Length: 197
Image (cartoon, rainbow, N blue to C red; front, side):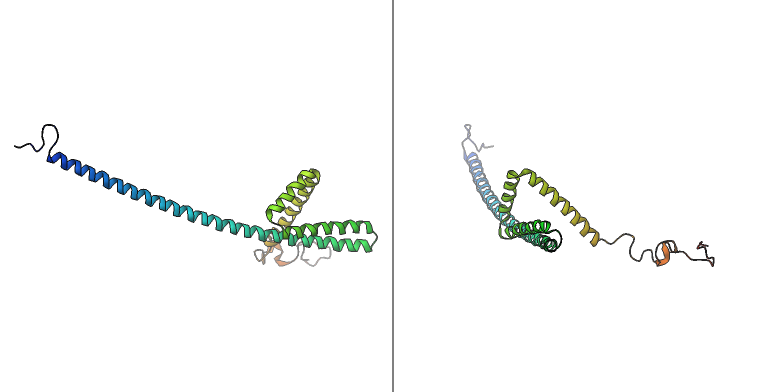
């Protein structure tokens, strides 16, 4: 049997194995390079799409916040007009000094509402921070007052949206719930003393 390789490892079979190994290494390098390039391109695409989506979401959030800011400014204008009406009534009545105060409050609230309409959210936050640093007591009192007003507003609006659990047709026709009549009604059984039979 003939030995295809020489004793020192050189020969046609060894050369073929080396060529195959080099070909495999070269193919692996090319494949790895191609996979790396594809992964880099995919990563760049995902990064670009994520950035685009983030910008879209940021724009949407900004639009929503801007709408809420304008809504709050409109609500403040409504409160200012209430103070103005109260102030006018008090000025023409027996308490003109209280009317002047109410009018001043109305002007300040309306001024704040106008500033809110025409300022960015960052400017408003900066103004609030500055006010809090300059007048911490007034800031805390205002925050407490606004928190109280917001809780009253939210509880009132939620009770208007949700009907009472005892209203509606669930108890109509039920003799134990007054059969649709007012609470406490009794039927007389012919006696004049109002006893129920």
